[in-house]
Image (cartoon, rainbow, N blue to C red):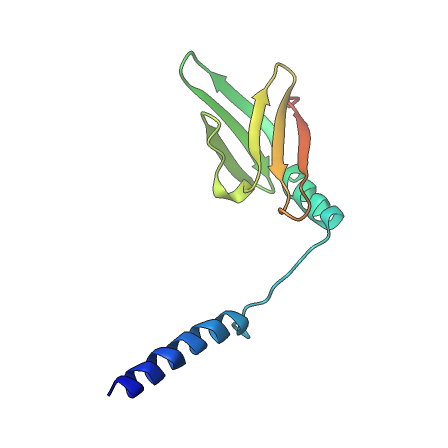
Amino acid sequence: MSRYLLICVLMSYCSMIHAVDWRDPFLQIIELGCQEQTDLLNKQLQAWQFRGSIQRVNYQQIWLLSDNDWLAITNNNVPHVLFPWTIQAVLSDKILWQANLSEYCNHKIIWAMPLTK
């Protein structure tokens, strides 16, 4: 009985080790170069244009427009449409955006969106 138990434990341990080596054949791993990531993220954000804002003491809303799609950003909570971009600062003449590239690039992108209408 103990021999069967030992064999079962050993088999389950070996299958766990090999399960790490196996991967889902339908899962595509896409690794982009750092420059390609930068270009794609810049295109993603540059498609949007600033259209207006509301500034109050405890409230801020920014409106962006892209191909007849409106996007409202309230209190710097950026919607998932613009992931991984975050707002770093809202200045009098521009919005500073930042996006982190993949870990293997170890780089950040900063882009300034002008506030001209």
